[in-house]
Length: 171
Figure 1 (cartoon, rainbow, N blue to C red):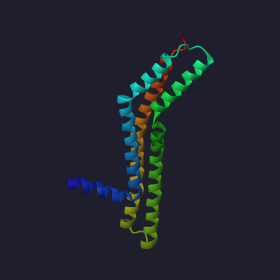
Figure 2 (cartoon, rainbow, N blue to C red):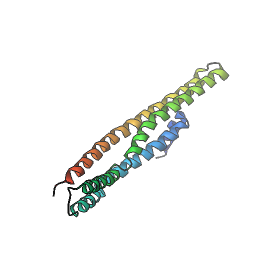
Figure 3 (cartoon, helix red, strand yellow):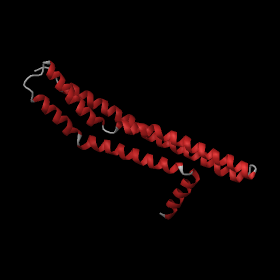
Figure 4 (spheres, rainbow, N blue to C red):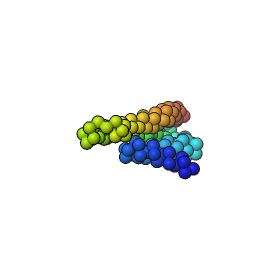
């Protein structure tokens, strides 16, 4: 266990401070992804049932006001269904940007080493790894979140469409 910890800490040191931000953002993104999955497993049926019962309890469903009530029910349920999806997609987009920030800070370290030590290969190698590791980590984190957010987006669209179809306009 200590060996794994030391390996992870060595990797984080090589990547620089930006790597900690990428790790925190990735953790936050995956907490949100798991929350959405748990929502669909547990709470989603209650949201659909509540909207359906409210719609089915109406005496008429053809007037203009009935259409507005239907739109309101769909909008409220859609908001619950999509939940934190926009925030997840934002995290997916931020991961590679933080990786690029790590690239810039790593290259600054390379140029600093060149200026102070005259291009010493050993000191430059540290800066190069500090430049490439965050880029790689940001891209991997973004890809993992991209697959999950695409799946969730399709699920949200499907469930919203099913709810719209379920709340029929005829009486």
